[in-house]
Amino acid sequence: MRYFRQLCFTLALFSLTSHSNAQLNDDGMFGSYQSILARAGYGNEELEAAGIQPKLARRQSSQEFIIDAPSQPTEAIETRDKEIILDTPESTVDYGGSYSSPTWGNTVLPNRVGGSPIQLSNCDPRGNFGAPTGCGSGACEACQQAGNRQRNANLVGGVFGITFRRDYEDDLCYGYNLNGDTIDSTDADLQSMNGLGASLARRNECGKGWESIFWYLEDEATASLEGTTFTHLTGLDSIDHTPSGDTIEDIYNAGCCSEIYRDTEILNFEFNLLRNGGEYTMRGCQKASFEFYGGFRLFSFDESIRYGSHSGDASYPSWTEYQIDANNMLAGFQLGCRNEISLTDRIRLTLSGSGGGFSNFIETQQVISDDNGYMAMDYSSSANQISLLGQFDAGLSMQVSRRLRAQVGYRLLGISGVSLAGDQVPYNFGHAYDLENSDVNGSLLLHGMYYGGEFCF
Image (cartoon, rainbow, N blue to C red):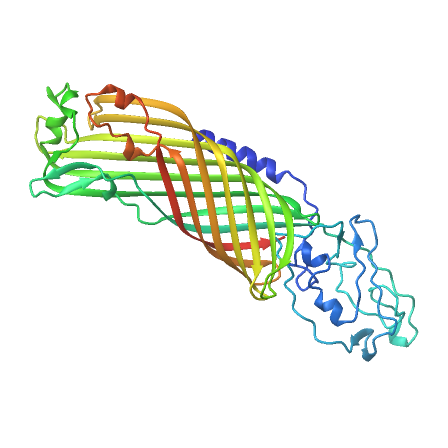
């Protein structure tokens, strides 16, 4: 786990040092939360409502942004204190295209002009959208040319929470009492595991970019069996407990109660390169866009199970436990695609799926010890395994403002070729071969909800 955190920290620093040309937008400006797709000409209802045909600026920020006004000037209905009020239709709220899938092309419609909102001038119908001077006296001077402060990329940061459930290994009975009640490995059910995550993505007007994603889950659960208990595990009579002169089986069979404790920790880090796939119109005239991505992924899955017994016999330790640790570190590459479908002006349906092959470095350890520090058994092993990981997401996003949107959805993640702690219990503790070799043929299935928000800088 230490190596995983160090590698994630290094990759995160590398990502943040990438230079971004994105500029912070003022609220209310055209395209302040529109995508590059919107600023490239899609969804410019405000300009069209004013009768303006925009010239798309070139990518170089040194180029000046000039928009030709109509051949006939728009009639001003009132002039007051050098402020021009235009008789134009009410502006249309535009939430643009999906910022997660910007369009192709080398042009972009900047969202700022000279740091001021775009205005029409009544001086020269073909003048630039800069504030005129001298209009209060009736003698308009030439309109000042506005410089272009161009933004050619979106930088989007997000935070989210996750609530997942997981599948477990096959039930294995560890012990029972005189009433016939049993205690199984899956009795310590984690139910729902809760975690947090964060993401950072950058996309430019050419439809290329990168994203980094991190999320984390951790939870623990305990189950107990009361009454005089006996162990159901085979072969513990072959493991001696030297301080008492008896075997581990004798100690478990003299227990007054037993417990199962399970702890699970999952960490995920991804760094993907992005490529826009284009946009299309669905049968119901909804706009949709899709994006390809591929990159590197680290996935760490660690879990431990402890099966313990309390004893009231003075000749035995008060607590004896059998502990199993299984650590999986997956590293590899993945490919995927995501699709966003506009259901309304504010709500979009998001579908995505990815898959890849990974090298899984596995470490397991099995220990039997007591509360006095005596260790009756200690076996550890390691292995490398080829694992497959696939993920599917389906969710909804709602545009809260031009910069902020909320998200909620369902995620399904499956992994093959992992080592589960519950699968490491040998058929017979008297067979050292079963203890010295990891079982790496397990599978892990996670599914549940994700929810959060993203902010466009």
